[in-house]
Length: 180
Image 1 (cartoon, rainbow, N blue to C red):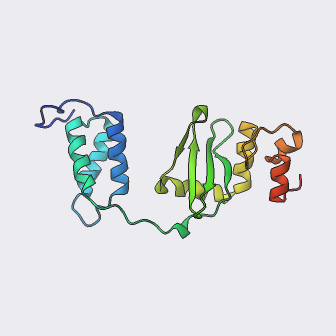
Image 2: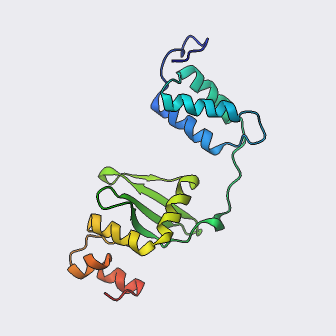
Image 3: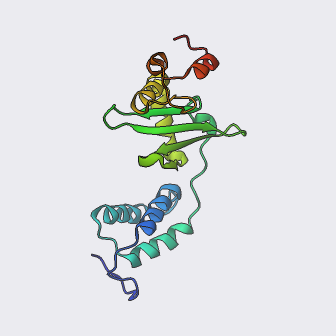
């Protein structure tokens, strides 16, 4: 373990929330005009190896907080995906997502984890998910319905065989114009 002169934190492993916060800062801050690229790469290597101590983590957080955020990407570059529920991967281990649209027109994506716990995705995490869903939106919706027995639009349980095979309940099929 790499240690520092800070006697209060040196030699101790950083907490999980501190590591997560540091990783988020690394992902969202802009150091393109600085000489920090090598240092940040070294931090990432230390995190992966589990050799970062709490003092170094704390100093890195303080330094990265001072840097400006990366410029916000153009929302128009997001792939268009209809609000609903989708799954990516295979039937054995699918990753489930909920795509929703705010009144402002902004798209949000939640990752649905075990026990139906949801975690919203940041823009950088959201783009690859939406891109993958947009490749074959119907297949991603059908996979969700197959693995959960729920409607890919409203998330209600599907009970009719026609609904299960279509991936949508009767009301949602009618609203979407799907003939089963």
